Length: 379
Image (tube, rainbow, N blue to C red; front, side, top):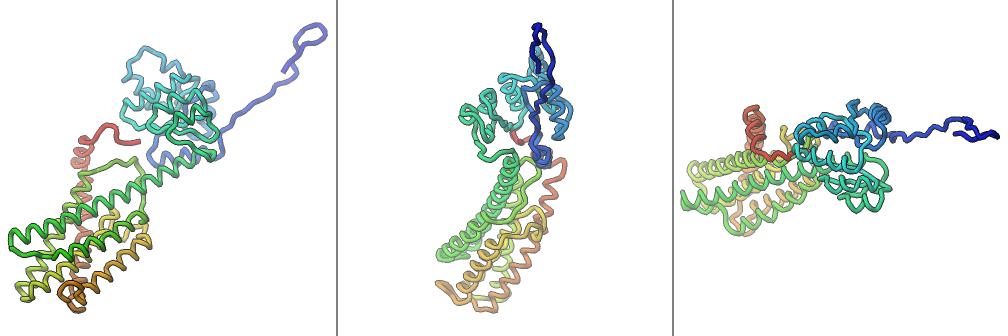
């Protein structure tokens, strides 16, 4: 601050320091994002020295480029390489922010952009996920895909975690659903074509479908652990695991049929009830096989609602089979045998699942799968 004296000369009165510090939770938020496999970059119009100091405080890194690095005649490939390795950018204008987003997208990245001002609007519009922070201008809000109402960016990390948990549930559901479809349809088809035997009646199929809905709905509330890396659909893995479990289920049921028909000489109507109960019990136990890449006892434990749904539906299925509701009664003795048989194969299927995942995760198999994916996978 200064003012003129009586002679018209300027005289220094003092220095007024201004500061725009980072939020207290910024460093923790950035660290949490990096733990999820997200590369965080700072883009600011502030002077380069200020940007470096803020980046140091929040743990971003010291590789801060000025706008001049983007204004060269270098090709897009070279510029994309600079942008990828940089920790942030300073002294930039709206067109620079927009170009940074475009260059990252051209490199195969899925880009999220946060901002609050009019000058952020072009980049927010271009980004795959434009996020206007609390207190943003109307222009930024209009350009963004998401508008935050609470201050800070920690909610973004929480949303990513929740999204990955939802994705994990979707993967579990898809694997379970495909495995069960193969198990039932392939069993019925092969039994009719090869042995001229209808393994289940139409009423049994209706019971299976209705009771399966209970477990399927409960999967949406299951406790899962989201991936620590950006997630993408791995249909090769889903179909491999589902097909393995489905084909195993068909083999198990044919083995039960052969034992009951050949060794025990049971009536075919009783065998149908045996097969119905086996399909119902094994199908619901498959939920616990497919919900995790690890052993079925892996943490987090299944949600209480999922356990109650499976136990409740299987109690109903067992009572239907034991007392013969619209089918030949089975009795508690044979029902116990079916439960023991299904539990044994449940343990076997879980070990086979682990072995299949180990095979899928081998370097040569994983690299072939990665090469077949779109280059835009990731975050």
